[in-house]
Length: 446
Image 1 (cartoon, rainbow, N blue to C red):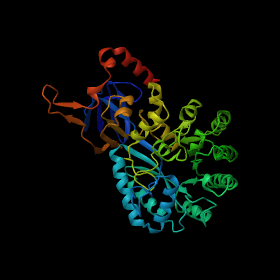
Image 2: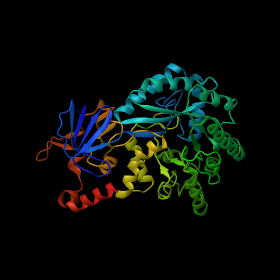
Image 3: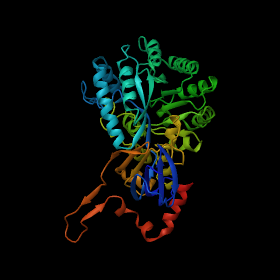
Image 4: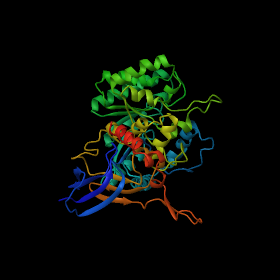
C-alpha cells in the first residue's frame, strides 16, 4: 500500500516515464508502471522529479535584513562587513527568528529542504545563536537546518572571539567555522586554521571554513586547511567555502594545491552569485571572474557543491532562495555549458551538497527519504535553463508546497492562446529527430 504515487516521472539520471511509490516516509518503489491504488496520486506528466535542493552555505542570521540600518552603497564585501557590524548591536532574537522563518517559507516553495547556515559568533551576546537554534527546532519537520559557529570578525581578531565561538558550540551549534583571511596577519590566519581544526577534532565535529574569499593570490589558507585536515584526522569532514583566491593563483601552484585538497578530501563550496558580484572589484580590465576553479576541482574528483550564501542582506541585495538560480549562474561563470557539464552542475545543488552536509537517506533510490520535488521541466538541462516552477514539494511522502504551472496567455491574432514556457520550447532537433534526445538521455544516465 502506497501513501502517494508520482506517475510518469522523468528522473535526473535520464530515465523517463517512471512511477515512484512512497510509503511510510520512504521511497518504496520506482517502476515503469505501479498498479497499486495509492492514497494520493500526482501525475508528473513527463516532468522532472528530483531530490530536494540543498544549500550548504548560507547566512540565515542576516537574510532579509536589506536596508537595515542602511543600504550597502558601494555593494562591496568590505562595506557589507562594516554594515553588518553596525546592524549587529541592534539585533534582537525576535527579529532574527521572524526573518529566518520567513526565509524558510520561501525556501520550501523553492524545493529547498536542506540548509547549512553560518551563525555569527563575534557578538558575545550570541543572540544570533539563540535565535537560529530556536529556528532549527521550529523548522525541523520540513527543513533540516545545520548551523556553523562562524567568527565573522575573526577568531583571534575579534575581542573575546575564541570564548564566544566555544560558547556557541556548547549551546548546540554543531559545526566549527572560521575566516582565516580576515585575521590581522597571514600568520594569525594560519594559527586560526590550526586552532579551529584542533577544536573540531577534540569535539568530534565537522569544519566549514570561509577560506580565501579574496582576489589576493597569496591568500593560501586552503593549503593550511588541507594540511590540518590530514593532521587531525578530519578527512571528508571539512569544507572550504568560497576559495576565490584560486582564480588569481598561477597554474603551477594550483596543480600542487588541488592534489593536496584531494588528499585531504576537502569539500569545496563556491557561491557563484555572491562570488561573481563581490570579487574583482579592484580590477579595471581585464577583470577577473571571481569564482574558484570549478571545472578543475571537479576533474580532480573533489566534491564540489554550490551555496546561495546571501539573500537580501548587507552583502547581496538580490537572491530568491532558488538553488537553480545559483546553478544557472555557475554555468555561465564556470563556462560549463555542455550536457555533461550541466549534469555536474545539477549534482552540485543536489547530491554533492548532500554529501557535503553528510545527509543520510538523501536521494532518489528505494529506501531513501520520500523527499522530492516535481519541476515544470522535462530534464536536468531544461531545469537549469528555465529555473522552472516547483509544481509539488514533498516531505516525508506528503505535499508541503505547491505552485501552479507557469503558462503565458497570448491575445494575438493567428497565434496560440497560451504557451508552456518549457514544453513548447524543446530544441527543435530533439522534437524532429530522436537521436539527439537519446544521446542526451545516455549522457544523463552516466
